[in-house]
Image (cartoon, rainbow, N blue to C red):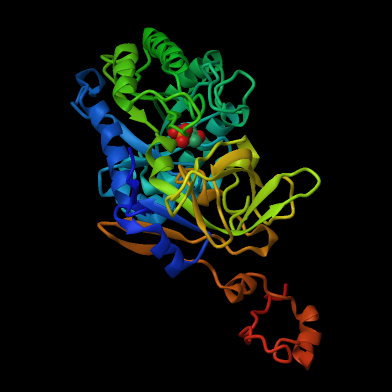
Length: 458
Ligand SMILES: *Cc1c(COP(=O)(O)O)cnc(C)c1O
């Protein structure tokens, strides 16, 4: 369920008209619903909290560590943090953002296959909950970093359970040939070695098999293997306190099979790995954020090719704003912001203005008839949308807006062209012509560009 609905013939977010937001902030623009973010977190965490089988020996509910790579806007994080949500992070930048948004260190997990020494040191000093170690060389470096700080590093080992799943090959992570995690055999050995190291505290194991998973079967298969490995470690006399089961639960993208409800997911988890006397961690990303956001874009024009008869709906949003269709063949429902007043429709190829054939959101999609200047919304764009944005083709990053209680705030403004240029200082040897008055801006009647920063000379 989400809070994007038609009201008086126009698509609204929590009672705020997307037309009004587009008028005030411009397009393309990402719009997020606070109520939907909160609801998704509470439904997911609530389902897990309701299960006695998933309580730790101390009675703690599972840690829900939102996988913030899905949407790491500070206002989104703060909204979730205020609900009690933790954070699954993959870089020092993400740890810093989580802490800035008020996520307590003891609710932060640090994942990723290539953490640098500096990032590990930062995480240890910050006192985060655990590092999820993905390989032997990483564990060796963690031991050295922890020793140099005279600290003990709490970590879990990410096992690749050999069960890959996900909506697309590029978001499948648990297959035996994917780069993530290590085999169970190696993990068990590493775990035993680490238990003897004075700067390492192996506290458990982790897995994450993929994303946009719409069937509980592969998750259950992976979880049940994880249970076997917990038991195997304990049989060796090793202590196991934590089990991190990753994320991956899918969301409805309209043309796909309906994903399992979090209640069914929690029930499956409880039946498969419950009552092990562990503290459980879950790392949902997409299921929290995807349907809490839309990308609003304006139709630039409709171009009909005489030769092929194709109709191209050319938008002011492009692959630099929302890359999922180009990267993963992802499907997004596209809705006109103004509800259609008749049944006229057309078959469109929906494209952006970027100079790449890949800048095609969808082909041969039947949509209500649209005209230049009208607004459309890409639904389910709250996860892996704005975070993957770039300024390819020198298009400013799309702004982000957060709606709450009938009002909204711009939580990442669109950069001005001056700001974009200020990020690229010219070295002194290239400044000359510009300083000598060859800047044609004033002659052409352009706004002054402000002072251009100068690159520090090496
Ligand atoms: C991406 C990722 C997640 C979140 O995946 P979703 O499909 O968005 O739920 C969780 N854990 C890890 C380690 C990840 O890399």
